[in-house]
Amino acid sequence: MSEFKSNGVNNFNKQTFSDEDEFEDVSIDCIDCGGTFIWSSGEQLFFRDKGLKNPPKRCKPCKKAKNERLSAIAAAQAAGIKQKIEVAVNCAKCGINTTVPFYPSQGRPVYCRSCFLAMNPDTLGKAPE
Ligand SMILES: [Zn+2]
Ligand SMILES: [Zn+2]
Image (cartoon, rainbow, N blue to C red; front, side, top):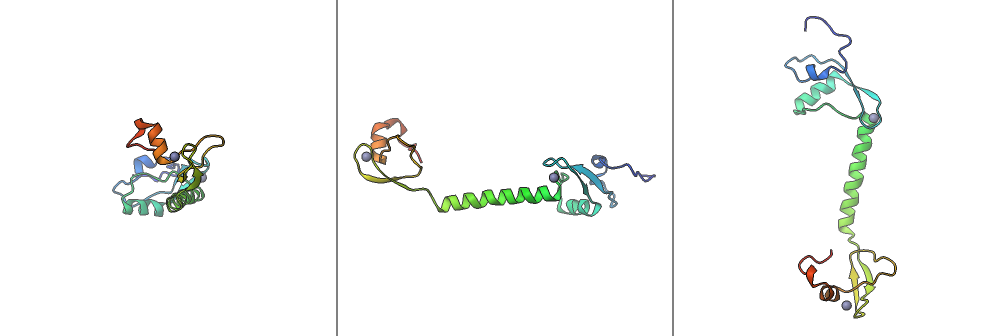
């Protein structure tokens, strides 16, 4: 690196994580919004210190949005596990009161577990959950 490259942007593959402690700001195209953002030298240093190998793919707002999406999904999954669906139904065959872990579709008969298994012996061991 004998001369300073002012047009060294988008060139980070050659420069990133070299042994040099000097980083140049790099412009990256965000994969979500397509906008260009600056991966600053300080952030590159941070990435290197963290042992991260890949440069960021998203601008800050998109990264934040993605993290929010992921945590919303995680929260929804966690809530889904806690609030397991139980719908009270009457078995279409024996009439017993039972619950099923899904919302039965309109007009479709719902059976209790034992009637279901009696009618579908093949599914023994892999009963619908
Ligand atoms: Zn973006
Ligand atoms: Zn039944």
